[in-house]
Length: 275
Figure 1 (cartoon, rainbow, N blue to C red):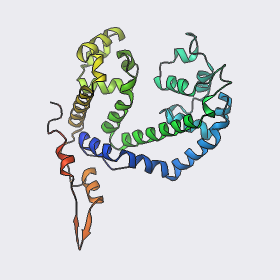
Figure 2 (figure 1 turned 90 degrees about the horizontal axis):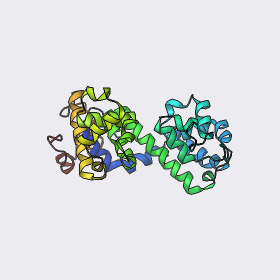
Figure 3 (figure 1 turned 30 degrees about the vertical axis):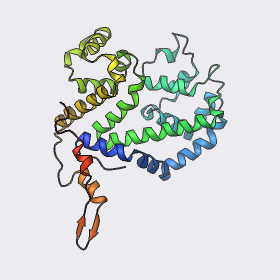
Figure 4 (figure 1 turned 60 degrees about the horizontal axis):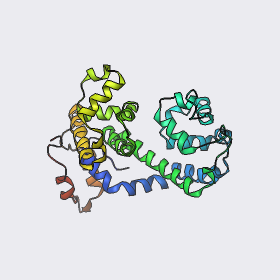
């Protein structure tokens, strides 16, 4: 992963955008993830029931990590019951759960007949889509660990296409936190009931804005500026991730190191991104 710790968020984002494919390929080839992917491809085709998935820890962990549910791996009983329940029954466990990650897990895996039947696992295309999902999640979470605001923007980009109402935002804690920061939402809004909060956000940022790339980019700039200000992130320092990155790409001549700086990349970041 490219080191971005200590960098202004927008600068880090531009660097990551240019190298995303290469970084994901590095994740794919790393011993830990290459082994996990190989096991998934080999064994997932034989999974027909929820019990089949649950009894293979390697598969279970892979799937949970793919949906950013690593913090819920210990809750095996809850996940099993959720996957076996009927989402069309409003009283069922999956219907009552509010965690959007578990509902996405349920819909994508698509176990049927009370968790005793699955057609997706037979599809090589579906299995490869799961591998891609796993790699994307490792990519996002890896950046969250080294540069939290950058990781949150990558998370935001992933979720934007699925936003159909402000309730989708309000029930998703990371997405809600992102929008609160980007829009400079006062603490008093948190005290409103969900319907009033949704109305307030709609007036502040109409839902159609999520379909406008320019409006989405503006949100990212505002989030970056406010996050950097809150975290005290300013220009580059001698030990910053940016200079480390530049040094990695340099060539040594004698005792000196020649570093090629991408002026176009650096100058593309607005001086005042919140405007």
